[in-house]
View (cartoon, rainbow, N blue to C red):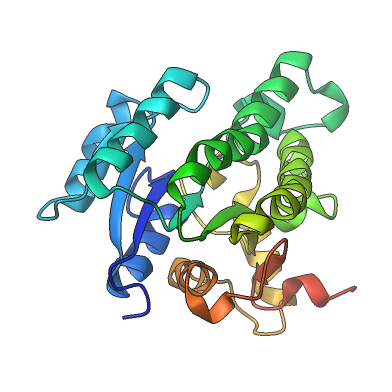
Length: 253
């Protein structure tokens, strides 16, 4: 029970295949009390079904709406009084920006991807900090496309690169408050968000063939890594990008 009596908020649960949901399961299994956000009424039902039978607060929060971000943390303050960790599993780019050439990326698509996928970590961290009165941990989700060119990942790769840099800058700012900021670079998973990337099937096949463990990572493994980064076991780790990809990132050819 590494997280007994600890409180966290999870951003990004869309359905049972979400990395955010895998993280929530690992964290709850370690004793944590959780709050969940959902982006819109369209997704609310999925989160309600997954959390049925629990007392976890469900809060509508579209991160491009500052008033909803403010309200989300007001609910956490009212319900729990404090916050120990935050999971940021948010990313979006228009579907047409995730195919073809990056050269064709529009200004609107670029701004949307960077705002939701990277800047939201800044906004959520700023809102969470006052509630992390005893220190805390903030964990976001990234992908190898931030480091190397991945076909069709395009503007999302640029957004994830911004997310990784943001992780380091936030870690430097928030360390004096004993708040740690890290990111997990997960291997490709068949999530709702990933389906928007062209040739996802080929990506999964190639990854499994080239990774040292000769398989794709499981969502459960990413969730357990999130548990590690939110727990006292990682108390000396901040500003890091933890690869959970069956070793794929170490391979050159």
